[in-house]
Length: 205
Image 1 (cartoon, rainbow, N blue to C red):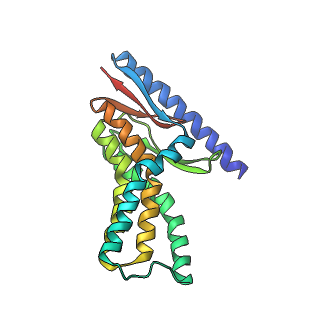
Image 2: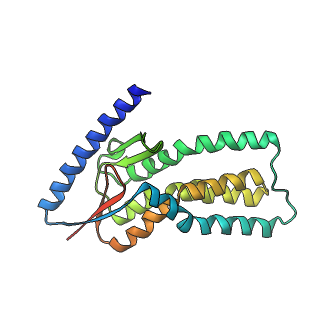
């Protein structure tokens, strides 16, 4: 564990160094910066506000489609659900990385992964400034692929297991939906992932 933490510290230092280098380049090119970050604690609260309604809509639509379906899981399916929830956590970050890499000049080399050990929170970090389109696409990709994707499967197959999986992934993307709302204030800016906080720095001319 200590070895992993030391590695995490080194990765954090590299992210910060890259951030300052990219920031200086943007400022030298005449851009003005605006901070769009949110604390982890506030992001967790806002997750319920921004993603909670989508989870509620998913449940309501499912119940309207399948009013007689039993929502209580068997012990076997409950175990499956627990395993799938754990698997979805790294997949969520991987989807961020794949989506953002499509808009990076350096591609996959500009994507980094790690764990914020003080919060036991995995993360995906993009090292390049991205356009509004690229940043929001990568930011919401896990919500669409895992949240909406599993809901469609649950809706078609009338599967409570897939419904719970969908709701979990929708709520897990709450930080992403919160940041997406913050992005709407800077649609013409380039965005650089903040190296240590939840959010971004917007650079506008």
